[in-house]
Image 1 (cartoon, rainbow, N blue to C red):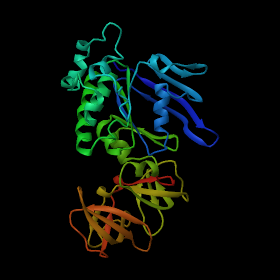
Image 2: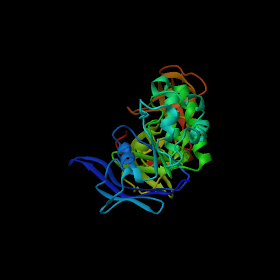
Image 3: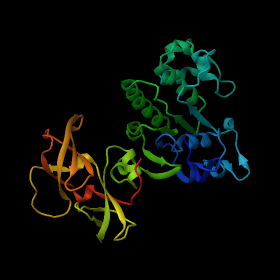
Image 4: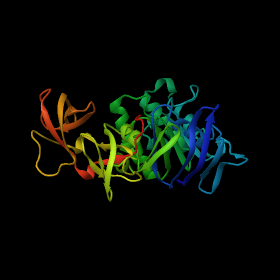
Length: 358
């Protein structure tokens, strides 16, 4: 059912200064569940609209399977793109009953209530067939919108912030259920969201956008543990980013100079360049005194405050002799202003090029 989506060198500007897509290229194999993740204004919704055919790119190509959607001198109309669309506001027609909504886009000759039965049953809304949108809850409306999109038997399903209008418990339940359904159908899914938990918890692949550029493309685990730059690191959760200057390199390990010396993996940097050392709060270890051994990846700090989070006690620490701060997760509460030592495993630390964080 699903086909490969290929985007090549996509460019789009609004006016002279607003860049929403800058040389964007990627390929999503058929049957893959992919999330487009980025903050507001990153360009992800404009990309959604270009793939859907609602917005024409300035240049570049969009393919689905062997069909060219957009290219030089070509712009295929949205209704000819074999795409199912699900919008943030559901976009249900107020004068149609549920079964009418679902059958609307089906192939000629199959637009009957009984033909909608498969999709109503799959989305568990068969008991709502005779209702109008104003008689439905938010979760029910979302199910109807998805059933309507799937009933067209699309090669690609585009989801634009599909769960943002739902409360948190329902949002989590619905997204887990529906992601399983999409995979069972084999449909290619592109899910646009600004919610990192939604993207990381449902997708096979995550494409991260910021400033109209594709920053990184990979599995949820890879982009979380090995972000390409400080922007990606910050978008995917609490990130410790310590700025400094590269002092030297030993193969893949690099040292950041200053009062803190950290070794980690990195590439494309040379000695003397500005750099940023990155690690996640849960990867560091706390010690009451200085651990014996290496002089690198160990530094002293002072506790600013501690608070309980679902992962444990979350400590905000200020580095000794520096205004920079880090966050570390530990098992015990620490007293404010207490002195501690932080140890960061080399394999949990990455040295990144400097860039303004998101």
